[in-house]
Image 1 (spheres, rainbow, N blue to C red):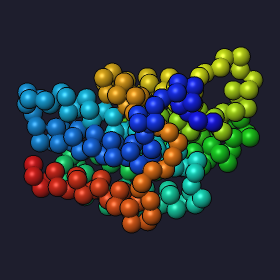
Image 2 (cartoon, rainbow, N blue to C red):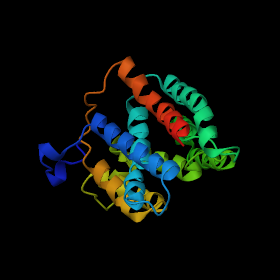
Image 3 (cartoon, rainbow, N blue to C red):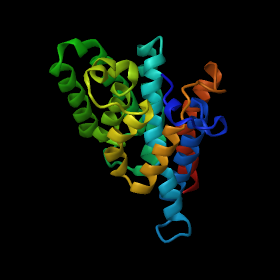
Image 4 (tube, rainbow, N blue to C red):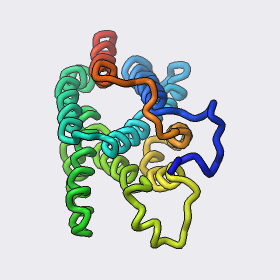
Length: 239
């Protein structure tokens, strides 16, 4: 089911998964540049930080989409873990020994939570308990966005039409689109990091057209992952 069909969004305004990735990367870089290289009193600091709040919700959304369409989920998980390990050095250079860990580990824990949920979903409450345990692990490890990040990924996943179809069919409430349903339930988690950023992230996700877009092939995929540690290292060297 097309997540934008009900609203007839013009083709020129729809965004592929690749377009969402580009927006998220630009948002992430702007946010980190403002946070690590600018002071709160600097011009446009607030604008950069608000724009930067787009990044994680979009990445969380894309991880849920990637998990649903991935043929090798273990490989997907291991790639995120690998880039999390690579990113730890520049993360430590920027944040010091504060005990926190970079967002790649949050994304990988999100994938682990989805994998366990899919395996145990027939066992009812147990599957949700395990997801909460993984979210608690993210909090205990102090990964970036910690438990909120894991739950955001989880909600994006279970609110996809393919995942929630049995529940939606039993419900008397009919939401007009998959994207709107996902946004409604994840918005409180997004808003924790700023209302303006949450609204911008919601708008970006709402425009998703369900297509993969122009970022294809292994080289492009790994280059996209490599942007995260590369930009952290560059900022660390400039700070």
